[in-house]
Image (cartoon, rainbow over all chains, first blue to last red; front, side, top):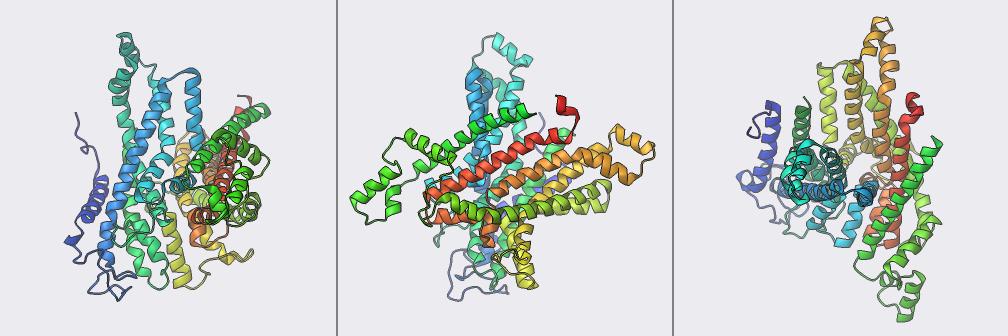
Length: 272
Length: 308
């Protein structure tokens, strides 16, 4: 069995390493910055200087340490919500693919309905039901983006169902649960990995957008900021203190770029 | 063709009813009594009772769904709590602004994306190709609100060329930044799709034949090549267009553009339930209609499949 990562080229590894660096720095921000991301100061919104390398925000908090720590939320929500979305999509897709007749048509219809509602609007409506918090964002992204996964899985299952290895499994009397767990899932999982990597980029982008629109709630002074939230707070002072929103914006673009590139390269490798 | 159109419309109608059901369920689950939200904390019990029976809030879930669905089919989306006007008339007031910005940005993304995509395909493997692809990767990875702020910082704060936000009639100065911000990600996607499709097509045998027959290169690329990439590219353009019609929420919020997307945020902040419901259903309807257009697209562009 080939180890994961053996077949990746240099550029892909570089992007992976950069993403890893951002994650490590978000876990240990004190390695670079000596300020706490939460300590306030009466002299707010200092421009970048020798003391605070990237300046401070309007409450006098150090932007460098806040930007570093902000990666935690973005990566965590991006990964969890994407895994959740794939898990929900996989379950619905499996059931849809294995069912037949009117039930399959009904389930397919439900997937179509979810595909027809713009996912941002759906997420915003969910937020109204669940209240504003990071948990809401995870649920909103997972539910809002599971429909394409479900359709992808359902189509694959319908094709796979008639292949020899499934027919033989059924012939020796394996029940549907056994067939899906031990025969269908192992063949499906490799197909889901590219969905995961490109999906994480999309999830991180959606997380930042939802945080920016205020779905994370207004952060209390001690909550770990996400980049979207930092940009939202800083956007009120964009023309007076543009240095507040630039670092989180740059980090957001970099991280999404990394995941996008890794995902793209894995997809093209599969084809080639 | 007419028959398939009607069949598709019937299916889409069912999907629309399903979408209304989902939105209705979500709204039903919102904590809090809608009657209290409308009348205020200090309303008398009789007033609350009157509002409940007027909005059939005292009915069962399915009766409410049936009533609401019938009303939307009659274009009655209820009254907005915050504005005190019918939701449908607010949507009609605001839709032209959204349509304007969506059209403008699709024009920018479509024209720019096709031109850059074709050049990228023709310069395949050179530094020009690399540059265009690099820029498109960067654009794809930039969230819309970040593009908005970059544009605002450069054109409004740095150069002082454009007003930072708002809308004044049809004054184009106010439209440039929202349209560009909205177009940025579509532009990048269209570049990629156009490039990949074009490279595929240009390697086909009939293109080689056309070149061998001595057709000028320009004619080969723009007539024979472009004709065959137009359907996938139009699909991307329309897909984004459909999403933007439902409200370019972020762009309109940042630039205070008075369209459907900003309306959605106002409705959420004021907890204006009928308005939220109306905006989502309106956006879904437009999205479904654009999906129908995408389905019909190949039939319009290729004569061959007409008999299929």
